[in-house]
Length: 139
Ligand code: THU
Image (cartoon, rainbow, N blue to C red):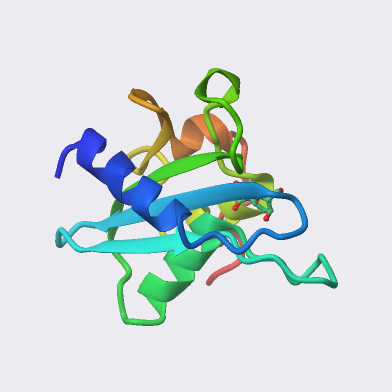
């Protein structure tokens, strides 16, 4: 699957965003090493803190179905109804970066941030340097 295709799936998932409070709609598409794609959207809550980001939705769906090997994630996000010229590349929040680190090799896992037809690529290591990693805790 190409990065363009993965970003397209993220845009499909964005349609399901439940974001009545922020109006910021996010979609994610997580590609496993086996070639399966798990999608996610942000899911907000009136109490605010239970809100789940699109990336974590995708990861938790995948992990809860037994997946542990991940290749890449595509993320897109923008304010509902905002003109394309105002869109930004949607890179994952700090909490989502830490969640990703739990399940991937940071030097190889790729994060695609989409903005319309443009795509920026990062490794998790670039977005979360000097991280607190699982190996520091596990025996
Ligand atoms: N959000 C995500 O889904 N992913 C991110 O990486 C950044 C933020 C969501 C959370 C909230 O519903 C809305 O975007 C505004 O912060």
